[in-house]
Amino acid sequence: MNRPFPTAWLLGAALAASTAPVPVLAAPKTAASTKAASFQTFFSGFRQAVLANDRNRVADMVALPFKDFSGGEVDRSAATKVRFLAQYDRIFTPAVIAGIRAGKIRAFKPGSDDGEAPGPISRGEYILDIPEYADQLIFAPTSSGYRLTRIPFYS
Image (cartoon, rainbow, N blue to C red):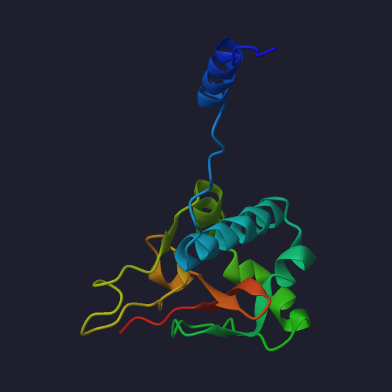
């Protein structure tokens, strides 16, 4: 016996397939977005440590030697963790802590930080952008992730 083709079943299956959710593929990550996310993760932990006054944890987030290029009266450079901890109150002034609390961070700006008179940071770096230049801090990528690296120089 010849049975008719089950067109109703076939039509139902086609409709079900056409309304099934299509998986959304994530946009490919760019190197810049990956670095920005890496910095945000680092800075979140850094901010928590500073605001909790967890000096040892902060010191563990510093690339040594830490350099002070500000040319101020007191050199806040530190070659060791012990020396960094001894300089902590000179580095983390109330203005610096307020800037960290407020998230006053900016990334390298092409065209501004790399012009004829280069700015205080290089590509891939971030700066604690507070009004007192001598208290600004630079965060740079290292082989072990982002770290606090220096106090910048301005000419």
